[in-house]
Image 1 (spheres, rainbow, N blue to C red):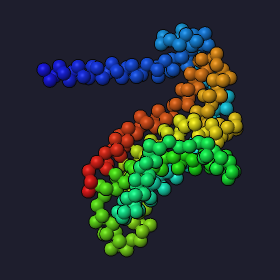
Image 2: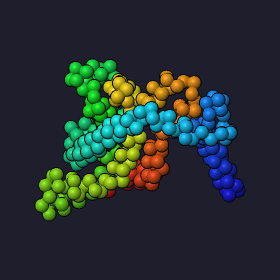
Image 3: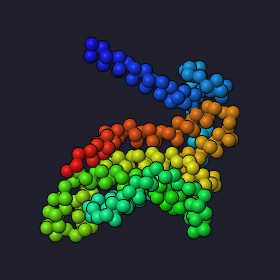
Length: 270
């Protein structure tokens, strides 16, 4: 009886997975179709594969420049998130004072309290930070609570005896963190890197306010701009979506094991 129950659950999971894949299949297939075929928004294979024309048109529309912008903003933001979150989490978790516990609660609240774009925009405008660095600063601040939350969970599994041994061997605070503790946080660092990279790479709300000129567009903004220009050319719109999504899809599928390892690294307290 258990065997049939497991088979039923597996079959049900497979069917649900196929339903989830339908939008992705439709996007990919329609990116190879002609303008007339793609307007039907069907799941049929293209009668005429239009690979070279569709992708060459989209590639020549400035998407490579937007790709460089996305890489700069995303990599700078993720680097700052990892560095600031890891150091802050280490100090807060190791001290364990009443003040540090209140600060941890304060940062955790940041996970559920939505950001206010208007005051943030006005502040950055006043400070002349409507630039790539301003957008990176806003995105960093928005994701630091998640980083601190994840790192504190991982640090609980690292014994304080390691800290004491390193100090007895002559490590100062910086050496202790960067050469002893931070390498032990590698699984969580990889997880945080992937989660924040996907979040920032796909960000639309922040970048549309701070990078609202065509020169500064990131990849998600090219979809918005491309659709307004080619609203009737669904083959080109789908092609743009494929190219924008491709880097993040490759990153996710190439690092699934690291994500699971990082998410469970703080499950057992040391």
